[in-house]
Amino acid sequence: MTAASRIAAKINRAIPHIKTGSLRVYGDFFGRPYDNIHRVCSAHTSPDRATLVLVFDGGETLEIRNPTSASVSETEFSIASASEVRWTWFYYGRPRLPENQYFIEHVRSDNRVSVATDADWAAFPFDPSVNLPAMEIL
Image (cartoon, rainbow, N blue to C red; front, side, top):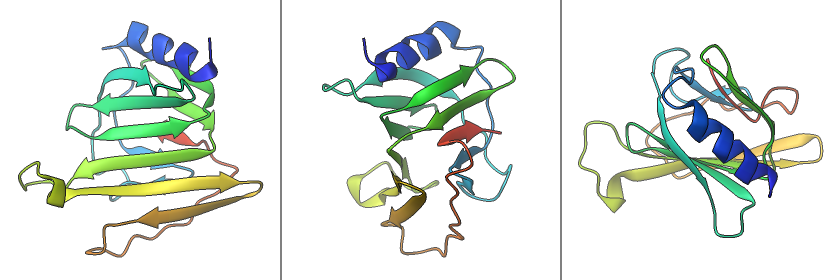
């Protein structure tokens, strides 16, 4: 069993008693800090079992490649490290159509995290840090 499979099982056992709140990836908040409430609905792995996929109540997905050390409870929800974290969401208030879907992807390489996004309609203040969890709900 892979780390992603173990973490997915741990998350699914804890639903609906998992901390909800704002998403932060390597220190970068999605949206304004503490402005969004995200709730995990399910977790599974990719076919190769290396990627943990979290599905949220707003139709968003968070793909976490090679996750390590998850804390899952009503008061804490985080994953210590990952090689890649990809957040995919539909532009809020618009129909859930492919042209309204966007992503933000954090890729860790040694002591650096690079960020890419296709959301060109906003200026995101990315400032990721390898010293912060790959993913956390605050």
